[in-house]
Length: 60
Image (tube, rainbow, N blue to C red; front, side, top):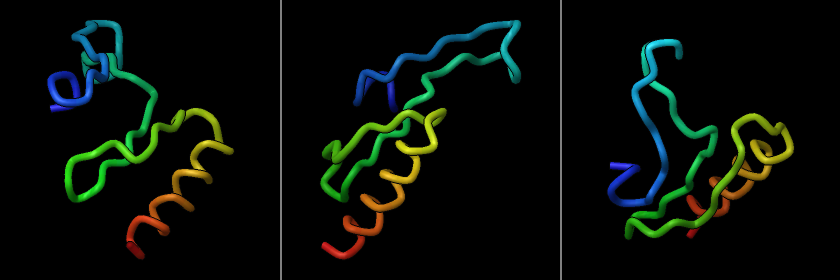
């Protein structure tokens, strides 16, 4: 879904845990399948921003 719909890269990788290598990005999608934000999952500031944005989105 992510690769085809939102162009998020991923690939099989025998050396990666679980055999799958994927983006470190979180993508916030609304109920109309629109991208509302992209966040680095390895950056604590970005994750905090994601949490704030999820709360805002749930209030819409």
